[in-house]
Each structure stands twice: as C-alpha cells, then as structure tokens.
Length: 220
Image 1 (cartoon, rainbow, N blue to C red):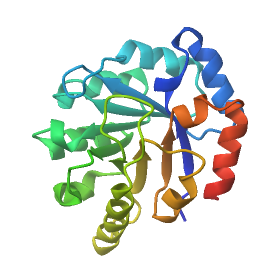
Image 2: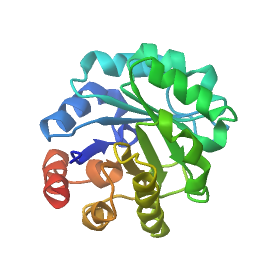
Image 3: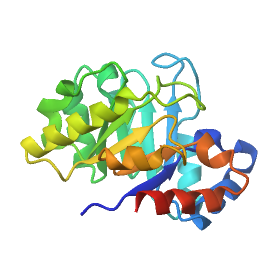
Image 4: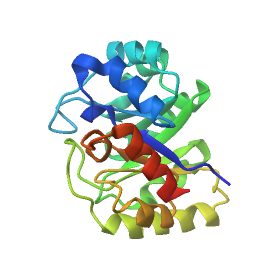
C-alpha cells in the first residue's frame, strides 16, 4: 500500500526566510516540499527558476516535488533535474511531445509526473502511463495560491484511479493541488489521492507544524 504524503507548497512560504520555513515544515513531518515554477506565460504569474531550487536542495532533507507550470517544459527539465528535483511534473497542456519529455525525466532516475488542469480529461494521459510515476490533478486553475477547491476534481480522481487499475498502473501516485485544507482533506483522501499539496492551508495556520500533523492524522 502506498504511503500517503503531505507536500506543503513553498509558494505560501516567506521567501526572505525560506530556510527557516523549510525546517519548520520538516519539523512538522512533511514528506515532500512542493515547489511551483511559473513562467508568466503558461500561467499568469512568475515565481522561481533552477537557482532557487538548487538553493532549497542544499538545506532540505526531504524530497523536492517540483511542478513546472511553464511553456516548453522540455527545454528546461535538465536544468531542474540538475538543480535537485526528486519529482518533476510537467503539464500535458504545455508539452506537445509529452512522452519524449517524460521519458527523459524518468531516464534521469527521478520521478516523472504529469499534471492536468481542471478542464483537461484524464484520457489525455492514457498513452503515457508507461513512463509515469505520478499524476497531479489540479483542483484549482493554476497560477495563484489561496483559491477554493473545485469539487469536480473528486470525480476526476475516482475516474483516474479506475483508469490506472484497468491499465495495471496502480503503482502511479495520484497528487492533488489546490484548495486542500484540514476541513476537506479526509474527503480528498477517500477519493484515492496519495500526495496532498497544501499552501495557505498550512502556512496560514497558527501553528503550521501542528497543522501538518493534524492533516497526517486525517489521511492515515
């Protein structure tokens, strides 16, 4: 049985005190660190690039879950692999040569992930399951933190779970990103999710490490 994991989103961290916040998340028992890379083209926001991922890698003791919300991800995957990504996720909508890019990520020895926007059907990844380690379902429209959870994501997860079973691909982890908080994480877990990204749901808590522990209890 796959371990369920909490992956706090560093998009909600204090970038002036990033090392402090990373240590705080690790103290709380976070399993991964979710890093949102945005280019201002694929999504209407700009965040960080490989140099910051490399700096995070130097202080983090848990794996880096790097989510590329960028156009032409194939052009940049090598840079993020070298920077220290442990999971590297690209968007199906941004990669015309999806299989090739995923294949190159997997060949590097790290986990290859693909992400689907709320409107994108799961059928779009049926032909790349052989090179996948993770599928990230967006439960908000990507680009900004603090948005509300889109409930239809739960049906999409259940359908994805069935598709993985029918294709003997149940080893592939399912991740969700967007609007995940303590009050809905149990329902999300019950739908079949393995990895839970939460930004404001953790960072806006009075005690973020305690919030991570409460979330772990809900999904266990």
